[in-house]
Image 1: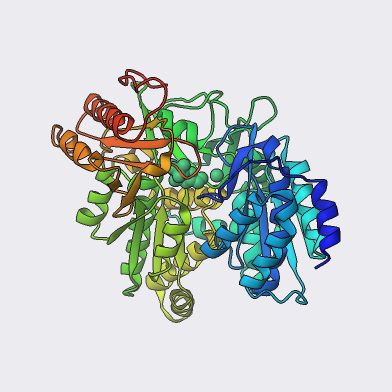
Image 2 (image 1 turned 90 degrees about the horizontal axis):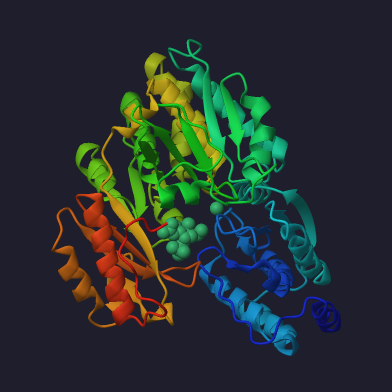
Length: 545
Ligand code: NG1
Ligand code: ZN
């Protein structure tokens, strides 16, 4: 390591004194103007990680659904997964080292992680459409270059596309070609083959309105459009030509406000969906004939997908195990429906896709979705091999089902939750099953729910257990929540410190919207009182937005 060069170049990306950031659930995330030094240092760290794993490492510059002024960075590990936990710690140490200590901290990491500095390194970089992203990704490249790592800058990419590129490169192209063209070809081929199996294809040309959150999803869906135009017409709204990224639009806005995004004109019963700012989340929705808005979130997406997969497995007579992985934010009705009606085992993990992804890897077929619409389906290698074999061996209807499963494997992004890939799977399933958006929605009724945020002096005073469903500290808070929950029917509530914002999140559900709102408010007050609330105490929810 050329420490002199590192010191010299680092000074061009100097850290503001005293700034402390944490590598959280989604990497580093804060106001874009505070991130230059972090980007440079993540370029350095990506080189070390690449040398250590002898693999290509990804660096994505994005702040997903957060406001346009924010930005962020996360590293992508060799098989497209999130960075290993021990390296998250290294990332935090490196990002927070004061300027003069940084080269030493970098050396310490390479010693601790037994990095062979002679090894070659290769890093791939992607970024979203934020105005700050181009310059910040250049800072990542500066970091990579000063450690003499090689790199490929993909420029504008969705987050899941970067995961895909990393995965392709580390599996010698077996998973697919590590180009945008390769991505589009792989997904569109699987989509076309799958939808061809529909009996009623052709009698109704499918069209879908997509709110792209004024982000990268619009550009990348446009690139995909002509590959799938025979089967599906997509109408892109909030495509970034006018509005601000994630402002009054996008999956996060629609999910948390439970209303349509700005710029979306909806006719009754028309199928619409929203991506988030880096296109790794998707939610669907529609207006009924009375003008009521219906949200179809990640839980209902997981339900649609797992019931389809179960039917195909039944058809081919293969007993591969399916598991559905959710978080505490999953609507209680979805969990009940999956377990009691569909008889699918459901597991709950901590918030953050890395936890869900990890759990989903335990099954032959692991379906994981966060309620906010981030998720995918993972197939174990053994399941994939078995299904491919059956697609050759079986006859007639069984063979058709096995072939469809084969297409589904190719259509899901196995490296990360991906709005484009999920959208294509959902559209294919709806076509194959001849389901309207209302019929899909009617699988079960969501329990009314409310999410709130509470500001506290230090959100880390709240610690949790049982996949974040129970509070351990501060003392008395869980008891207070238990007492409040008892006052309502079909009720449930929990609180946890956010991993991406400086707030505590409160979630409540109950038999009516008023009750869910009232319970959420009461729990917010308990948090405010027992966990060091700051500012005004939480106000009752009339319309929280
Ligand atoms: P936090 O801020 O830790 O709640 C949010 C989402 C997560 C995940 C991350 C990463 C909710 C309640 N939380 O995390 O599901 O998507 O952002 O983007 O939706
Ligand atoms: Zn996102």
